[in-house]
Image 1 (cartoon, rainbow, N blue to C red):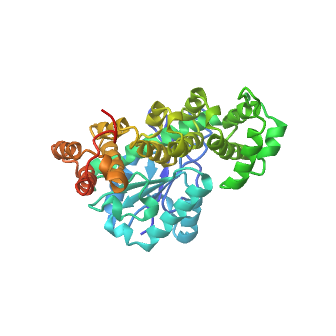
Image 2 (image 1 turned 180 degrees about the vertical axis):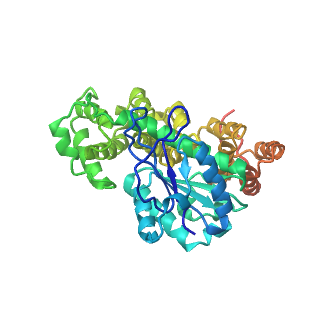
Image 3 (image 1 turned 90 degrees about the vertical axis):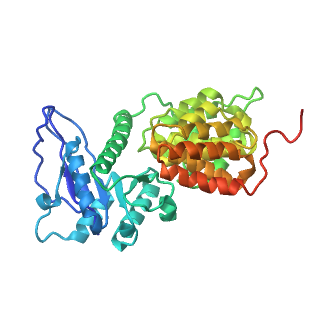
Length: 416
């Protein structure tokens, strides 16, 4: 039931594995070390792989594919010593993981071991404020059958074969590459951030999830706005998005920015929103996506759709794309062109993007079915059948059934 224990060893340019110091490698971990070899200075990634023992055959295929990737995994038989405490090793692996790969099947969903591992990983996501879980479905389990805390984690259907293992390994490699790109830039302190003692005092008590304190700090800042609409404290606060990720004031600043944007949206210009949307730190991107989600309720004219297009893509971190897509769906009733974004994504060459778009259309159908054109949905279902995209078709069929129960609102209620 436990994850498959594997070690990821770095590789020289010629493909020869570097020698790593001896140590015990624990269950479920692709373990990597800080490499001292002058040929390569890198911190590879610890990846916990959770699966049912009944899916071990596919897990071994995934291991073989990951062995061909730059992590070069080692099998558990090579790294777990006789007499090791498996439970201690499992706990250590979960606490130190950088990524949690979940092999989903009917068997794994019934496994109490897997359930415990997944819940711990979700809790780690909350604590670390970053997405960790990568689920891969290897049988006919529907996304809707996953536990509620996994339904938004971009579960991918892959085959329980070598091709599926290749997709898994590629996805892991892509996620690691994106995170490595960020950490390579974040490793340096932000020398250009000018600190303001008054601002530091205002936001220093804003803790993670403490929206009351964040609102209070934002209100105090709004009072400092002059009659021309300029607020010097806000300008400085925006620069705090470049603080090092280990600086606790970064999270205080992000919460305060989000609350300030709700109180005074007119003080946020396009340049500020675009800067946040293109930031390397996904928490900053998540903040601007959440701002747009809030504005969609009362100030949709403030939202630059091109920014949402970038933030709402299927392969963004869930904490970014979820609020960005929520903003788009909220705007769809008043700006019908927004629906075209999701229908255009149904024509993507990437199955995951099509499934993501189809799920968004289904969510709209559940709440505002009357704004969806039944003819467009039927046309897309027909086209998707030609490429045998069962997952996207499943969502669209459910959407079509809901749409048929309503009368389509084809345009404005009043007008010519």
